[in-house]
Amino acid sequence: MRAERIGFAAAPMLALALALTPARAETITVRIDKAAYMPASVSARVGDTIVWTNADIVAHTASARDKTWDFNMPAGKSASLKVGKAGAIEYYCRYHPTMVGRINVAQ
Ligand SMILES: [Cu+2]
Image (tube, rainbow, N blue to C red; front, side, top):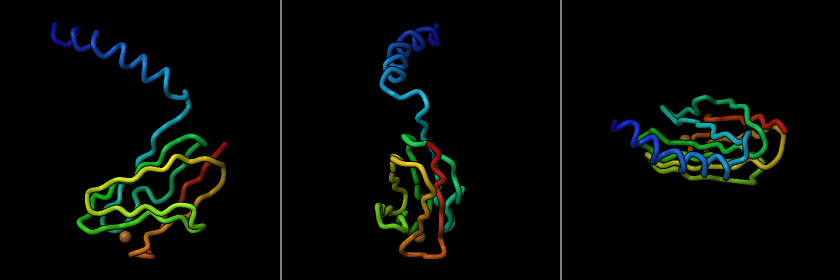
């Protein structure tokens, strides 16, 4: 009974969310844990969103090698990037340059 009520309430919200979101767009999560991007390499499509979440107790960044973006993330914080064009994006942490990541963006 309770589950049915929740289902009825959620259905219009779900329909709205689907209508507002391009069918293919996805959110890809990269966890920062023990000074590493997990996973270090992800595949995405143009229009997808990458979300980094810093699970460490120190700050990290996700900084594009080509300097087009640079996100600073204190402990426990997140940052997101909507990928706009196809190609390989290399990024790193400004505080810990051995931390490197890659986003392979397909059209
Ligand atoms: Cu770092």
